[in-house]
Length: 293
Image (cartoon, helix red, strand yellow):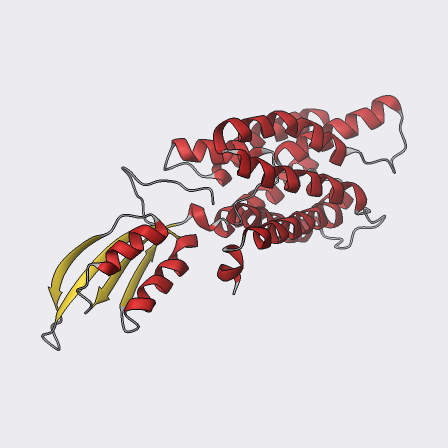
């Protein structure tokens, strides 16, 4: 059902907006009450907010990090427009605005929901990483490092958004260590690591898989339909079943995990009895297109 929903562009946007709400809940309910800092551009905005609050002696109830996040995303949106097309820009703009809105409207509880810092980091990291990965899987982005990471991942097949986020945040938390206490930095880093790990697992376009399809259907229409529907190359060879002695055809296709469900659907339409072997996490080089959506 989830895969079917992702085929509808409007359903993708709705799911992505829900994911930004989930992200804002993870940050404002589990991370901010602990006096910790998020990762990426939002974490940078939170640090700027804290510095301004102290320097200008503003009320501690004022949290304008969501507004700052919207402003710093303007050059990021320009990058999305120049390198990833107008449709991706439009979807990203919706997610950036909704994310900034939710971050500003969701009230930070006066007392932490979870009193133990490590537990809050794990829960917050799980929620935030999953929601960011879900946003990317919908072909959208909440802005910030996601767009830059996606752009770089298109340039290098071995590059992942999560790894780029970790690299940027090393610098971010170094600044945080200089401005604040080391204890705050340590727990913020723990949150960042869990968030990056769950992001890479939830971002299904980021997971490559090799699929072997064993079919008795020798009609060339099957590989042609796979190539036209999924836009992936197909290699096949003739084989023979050792037990039955029947002739079979073995098709090999490299896809992202996001495309795996559609591949199965295409094959089942022509051969309901086809047999699959799927190996995830394979390294793929050469002419393998890294798709955003």
